[in-house]
Image (cartoon, rainbow, N blue to C red):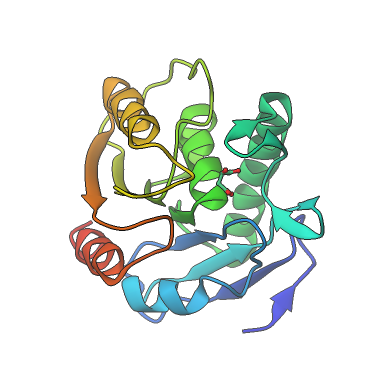
Length: 206
Ligand code: MLT
């Protein structure tokens, strides 16, 4: 799977080996890149096409999907702008690779922009797996997420994302009609095996 730079985001793309499985959009955390989540994607979504863009914002040289003013304090204007850019890329990639709407699978910063995609441009996603996400907007916009499936997995001991923030996100998405499953695992910010196993089982049921 070669790194592609022809579309508007540098990305990797791996075609599906099972056409019945939904494509998966992989969104890395701060300091990651388009390679980071590919093995995880293959494991949790066997057979799915994988689309993995690299965030365009650099924070001290570390790629991210949008700017932040401090840890956990987002530059919401930039977040809105970057969310629309990413949504436009998803549409470009769907056309180029002939893909159905993907299920996003994001970790940390990638999960936060996936949550922003759901709130601003839900039409581009079939659903989302959000690992260590928080509510991306102080006042989340009203939108119709009827029946959109979302798996949210947060760490009870996560020092970066207070449990209340993850619960707020789960509540905002549910209030807008999404079918949210929120798991809290007894760990910190990093992913654990239970996160991965639960996400795999959840995706298999889609
Ligand atoms: C963010 O900036 O999206 C969150 O603070 C998570 C992180 O990337 O550290």
